Image (cartoon, rainbow, N blue to C red):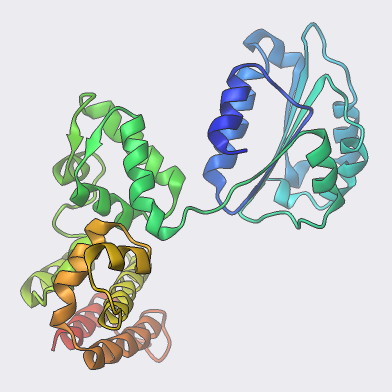
Length: 332
């Protein structure tokens, strides 16, 4: 069952005794557990019938006692075990899950890592309730995911603004949603979000960002690339430079693959690289600026300078200077 169907049932008041929410992506785990917390009990029922426990603080005997208690002036009790990945005796809850109380809703939130499928707890939970595995959204799916989220909030978004969000925020879904919610406060419903909206309301510069640096390198615009690096040098911490190397590495590995694709149409490239057609079109335009030999040399350069930025073989050169030196060598 996907998260939308699960939340639809929750909002309709259809509850099961056990929910195990686990996996690498925290966003969906929070979304589902928040929906259960909002709809399982009326506000006046929560004082006596709701328990929220964190894994590091959880005590097994107290948990079992809570789970086996009957609701007070309510149809059900709710117990949410948050940060369950920190509860060392999690598997011991299997004794309860094998025979759960129908009037208790147990929600286990196990973030950042899936529970081993061989565990008895999962097998018992599958019989008693719902298991939801929350996987990371693949990188090539992020553009469409963000677009759908923006539309769900009642807005449109330009392709460039969408890419700016994705490249700047990465695949942290919670952060993407938070920033879209921030935009929704200041922008009229129905507006098509552009890069100016993002710069003014989120603080991501429309001109000086990872996405624009990759574009400058792609078209060999040395002056623009150096302006962006100089801006980074004044506004970023040394550790903030690390994602820049990843972005440039991704660009060069992608255009290397395109060089050797038998079919170089926009649709074929998008399919082969599992990227959005908008991105594929940009890569096709820039691939001829770099021969396979130069691309291979640049990938090696990126590896070398990434290590320098992390302090390997470099004790004194600041991050901005390392990046300036790298960009010069990439483009010459």
